[in-house]
Length: 299
Figure 1 (cartoon, rainbow, N blue to C red):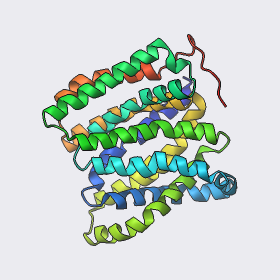
Figure 2 (figure 1 turned 90 degrees about the horizontal axis):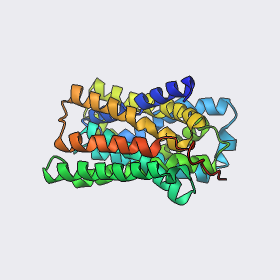
Figure 3 (figure 1 turned 90 degrees about the vertical axis):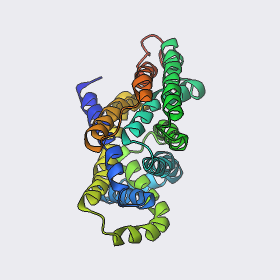
């Protein structure tokens, strides 16, 4: 990995590691629908003027079907699911569940897209180890009553969507810039959520949310949406969509530190036993095995 790719890797990891903490703050004062709408609208307001200035708006909009599919997989579903799940589950656990993304991506590319590297024995071992880690993690904590299975299922669905979204974008819109794709996707999601937010947001605002809740919304919209997507697509150009999902390691580290230090979230038995398995499995599934089994070119 080049030095530039490493910097992008760390930057995206932090930008997408902090949302879990700030979502936990925002849900104390805002409804889930309001949070998602404010987040995507702020992100769109930051990025759209840049895209229009660069003259990329119309060209990207011609690929509106692909953009809408990406927006649905990356934002419409996951951002509601994760936000709602955090109402009954720790933010650090939410970050932990996202570490399943690399081996989900490896499973998809290896099974359906002919990625030979994803079918390498080391990668397969990572898939098995990672799924075992999730099973142990969820099983122990669910049995002990530490977590509820429903929000875990919501987080798992989000991870699947997150794994698919960059693959879809890379295969259907390879020539569309990440900046314009992100901007228009955010705008589309804003329109989708607007009718619901127009009902929930006035009620939330009427309760006079504290300053920290508004700060959390701004961070989610400007840093974890607008800036993070620009950096993420730059990272994909350097390392590819499957390996870019390894940022979940940094996500997990940031989410765990913020959750434990500032939100006093517990470290459960399931996390202690399942976490090492998930991380090891994700590493093996997401590592570059092309030196042994070259990736088959597609498209």
